[in-house]
Image (cartoon, rainbow, N blue to C red; front, side, top):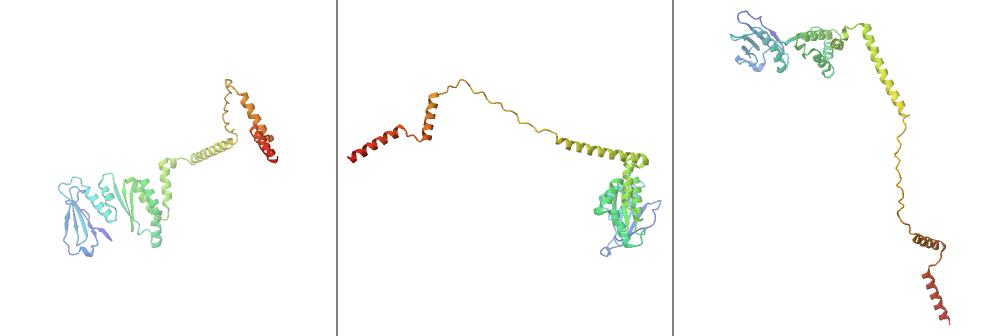
Length: 279
């Protein structure tokens, strides 16, 4: 669906809106088909595949006269590659749409592409921020920008889009929106300066407290280990003095090299045997 244009205005007696588009080669030779989608209550929609046009008209059961305008806007949004889930929201009473034409605002093609990309932002971040601030769904497609949302949000979207095409970065409008939401926009210059000074003083006080805590850490004494009390020796246990004396004697003999009584007897017997052999 490369291009689209509206046919004549709606008549008073039988209200109808039509949407004409370039026919595709594969659709030629087909007959016109009639369908009535469930989301369009009491509205007839006719799709002509030969002419490449779509017409919506009211019926005798139509109770909302403005539904014909909303049906026309729905066809417009679908023609601008807006998703069906978002386009159907136009049928709600508190939702409107705005299709902003930006192709004729900038003559140089390269400059136009750059400014359009500036509106989208890196990975769509600028467009997402604008959607959050205005509560609108925004779709940038070709030479148009489609927006769906409340009336107040659509005004802001149109202003930002037109300013971006006039080489005014959208971030400035986003900042103003944030100030409006927080109430800073309505403050005087002296009040803004006072708020900034208070914020700076608060940061300085936090930094001072952190430094003081770090300095005080060096003066904190280390924790001492708890003293364990030794158990008092029981006086009831009896000491064997004789056994201790024997142990002391044996130790002394070992240190001096003295022979034990058994070793002395063995030596005596060996000497006697040697004397007998000599005789």
